[in-house]
Image (cartoon, rainbow over all chains, first blue to last red; front, side, top):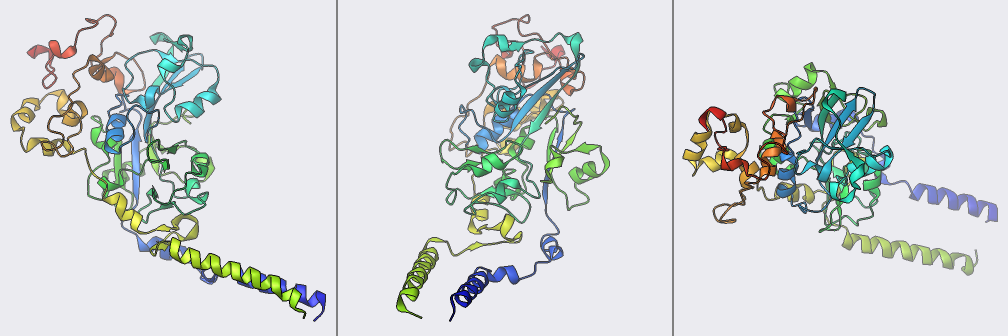
Length: 278
Length: 156
């Protein structure tokens, strides 16, 4: 055998051996879709109804064993105050665990730092210099509202694609879950999520995220946050059920999703979004 | 071909065999691609059930109603009937066994979650009865005057 032939044959053999058998199996997307035609969890948040009481965050933290005083939370509420001169102020003190009990709002000049921070509820009045907070006179406010945030349970979850060990995955009903026994805590998914929903669990030392209270919804209960909300600003529903009030609202109301341009197909729908909400 | 060409190949094949063998023992049996294929569905199937078995602590007012009917009846017709008992009283869990007593939050801050006046034009918050916490009896607990189960001002 010539050297040339040997190299050629080796390359063919290596290429052939590296094709997994499953790659030769053709998957029909219609087949996948038909496998679970009856259940796909979605969420509807109404920014007009939300009053920023934060009972949802309180309930979520206790229900899901998120350390209560740690600066992490599976869900949070953001306050947007837009002045008549066009300034946008956003804050979420302690992830709104204790609600918004003061009119003062974070007035920092670095929106990027704020975005990174408030996504994880890290904007804490005690940890920011006093001058960074200011009260905005009522007559200067053009728009002000509260936006509940939680995991979007994306149809194309970026966080799942980046997991190197198969510890996070999308369940057949659309909810993205984390296998705590299998997660190695590398943090790729925390970086990969465009919505800043994931965080590192300080007790279990693994990645952690909202899972629509999977233990509750699979028993026919509502999520803890939706149960705690006195105003119906948070609702959980099944988009495959045409009679579900959430499905009806999504079909008939003017709704929006967050960061549509990322192509993740988020499944948390909002009533009353505007361009300032990120 | 000569032996020295094949020898490294045997070493590589041996390594592959060892890795496959180790993998056989480490990877759980129910590891599978699920229905979403490799990109989104590669996981340990049993984990779905593990999450479903997670303990529920928020029992909702229907659970409270089993024993505390008279308290539930007190709220009927009040605007606070919208609020879950456990929002203020603390999550029930396995109450009355565990915890025996719930951690009721009677603080002023709890009421201020909704009742600090925030005149936000595009939020329902402006429609709630609101006070300025600095002006309205600062330092006093709201529940000293207001009955949280029937907060109507006429009944004070």
